[in-house]
Image (cartoon, rainbow, N blue to C red):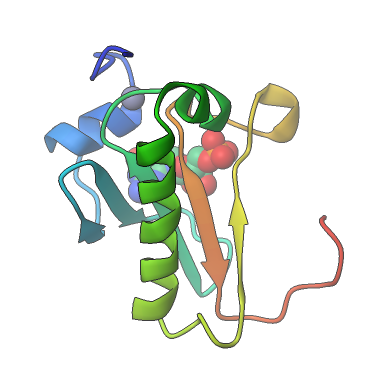
Length: 119
Ligand code: 5GP
Ligand code: ZN
């Protein structure tokens, strides 16, 4: 089991309320809040409240929590009325992928037409 909080982690501070965020959904073990620099009309981050540095370490440690994060991402899409039109779920993992916050999170992006392909 990972340490529940990392005192130097930005998203852990959002979980504890030390840094404010616009929360859109919350469960006992997950939090969903709007990205501070949205890249699409809907841009929400879903995180486990416990600290894991990325999606791979989260998945290796806790399958149930990983599933909860994905379920909440689907819940965000439904709440934001983008479930039908379509949306992207992105887990940046590692610096080369552009990960800048090393607390596992999935980006929920939608509300516009994306290009086909991945980038
Ligand atoms: P990454 O690049 O690590 O996959 O994504 C980190 C995301 O966190 C970025 O999209 C960035 O805009 C967002 N972010 C960084 N600092 C904050 C913050 O203080 N509050 C919120 N709500 N989002 C943040
Ligand atoms: Zn953290």
